[in-house]
Image (cartoon, rainbow over the protein chains, first blue to last red):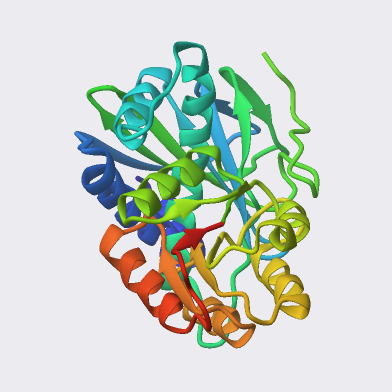
Length: 181
Length: 126
C-alpha cells in the first residue's frame, strides 16, 4: 500500500474499514466456520470495479452516505449457505434462492452490527435493505473514482468488500447504473 | 408472529422459536403484511426486524401498538447501535435481540415478554 493510499484510508474511511474487517472475519469464523487465509487492503483510483459472481450491496447513512458491496465467489457463497442454513430443510430446486438470501443476510448482519462501533452518542446510522447484483461484471464509475477494497481469501473462494462513495455507481434507489461486460 | 423480510432469517428464527416450545402462528415478510395480519392472528409475541423495504420495523410496531396496545414486540435486528435500541424501546418494544440470534438471549426475551402478558393461555408466536 502506498503512502497516498494509507493516508486516504486512515483519514477518511479507516474507522468503518477497520470495523467491517474485524466483524467480517469474526462472523465468518464464529458463525460460518470459514477462516480467511489472506487479507489484502487496497485503494483503487480507476473508473471500473470488477465484481464477482454474487454481490450484495447495502447503503449506510444518509443519501450522501456510503455504499458497501460484498462481492463473493460462487463456491464461497455455497459454503456459507451450507453452514448458515444447516438447521433448515431446503429443496434442491431452492438451493440457488437460499444462496442469494444468505449473501444478503450476511451483509445485513455484519454491517448492522458495525453500526454499534460507528454511531456517536444519540446518533442513528440508517441502513438500506441490501440489494443483490448477480453475475461477474464490471461496474463503471467516474474517472479516477476512489474505491477502497478489502479482499479476504478463503479456501472456498474470495470475498471483496468494496467501500464506494455516494452516487458513483448507483442511483438513489440503489439501482445499478453502470455497464455490464 | 415473526416479521422479517429475509426468508432465511425468518426460517432460522422459526426453528429457534419452536425449539423453545412455542408455536409460530404467522410469518410476515413486510411491515405492511404485519399490520394487516396482526389483528387476524392476535399473537402473544411479535419478533420484528427493523430494516425492511417499505415500512420499517419501528414504524410497523408503532402502527400495531396504536390499535393493539396489548401487543408485545421484541425487536430482532442487526442494528447494534445504542441509539437504535433506545428508539425501539421508547417506541414500545418489550425487548431487543441482536442478530445473529442467540437462542438463550431470545428465550430470555420471550420469558420477559410473557411475564408481561395479561392473559397467556399458550405461548404463541406470530
